[in-house]
Amino acid sequence: MRVFLAGATGVVGAPLVPQLLTAGHEVTAMTRSVLRAAQLAAAGADPVVCDVFDADGVRAAMADASPEAVIHELTSLPPRLDWGDPNLFDANNRVRTEGTRILVEAALAAGASRVVAQSIAFAYAPTGDRIKEEDAALFTDAPPPVAGTVAAVIEHEQRITGTAGIDGLVLRYGLLYGAGTSNDRRGSTGADIVAGRVRLVEGATGMYSWLHVEDAASAAVAALERGAPGIYNVVDDEPAPQPEWLPVLAQALGADPPAAAESPPPPQTLEMSLRGASNAKAKRELGWRPRYASWREGFAASLA
Image 1 (cartoon, one colour):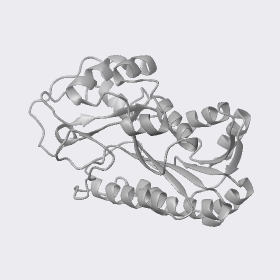
Image 2 (image 1 turned 180 degrees about the vertical axis):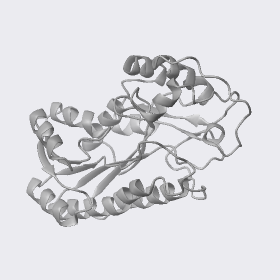
Image 3 (image 1 turned 60 degrees about the vertical axis):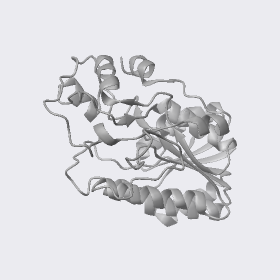
Image 4 (image 1 turned 30 degrees about the vertical axis):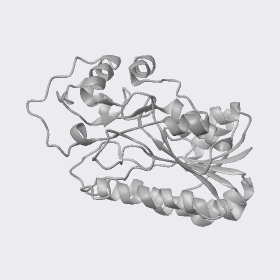
């Protein structure tokens, strides 16, 4: 299949390119970097240098590639998360709104019939069941900066799944770990854990769904040829609260066991309110299985 991959050198795009090539697909890989374009060419992809907000450039690149399918793995996340900044995710929100519109319009003009796009599996409303299916309500009344993210996710997902002439599949990824992520040794969260700045919240009830970047990539490959249009949670098999996974992650990073927080956080914080996600639909309809069924084995295998 001829595939146009936007975000080819990102956290998920990097492992996705070789997986697509191994599966026999012809890959046009979009990047903003001339240097990375050379690396993509060496890997066997056909690189194109373009910024997603250059609508004319994207349209021309897509027309030249004439893809049968488009994969959207673009993000623009800050190197460190400052939750006190109401504009924290503005750049990423623009990718999910304006960037997605440009990609989908270019895909339609180029004759692509299928679009696979990443989203997030940790935007569910903090009410009811601790583990959510895809039809559960999202956190639309969240405080900033989460509110803007949820609004952008909704617009993004509706454009992917609701555009006439496109079979759109949205992959709601769990919290990513592995090479290039914030939870890697070189990432900001990993560094904070090693430095002892992340405290263990005893009794926390918020559920975290994790996903290795290689498994995120393999789900995108699966979604090219299987699955009806719609939304899929792509997470591992074991949602868990922070007191369970944090010591395992710290050990994998070579850090000391995390110290306990002096007092429990407010109920609305992630440690207390976050909802996990079920991967049953992705397994059933995409035929997908995570290589790392649990963060327990994944942390140790990929971060040690």
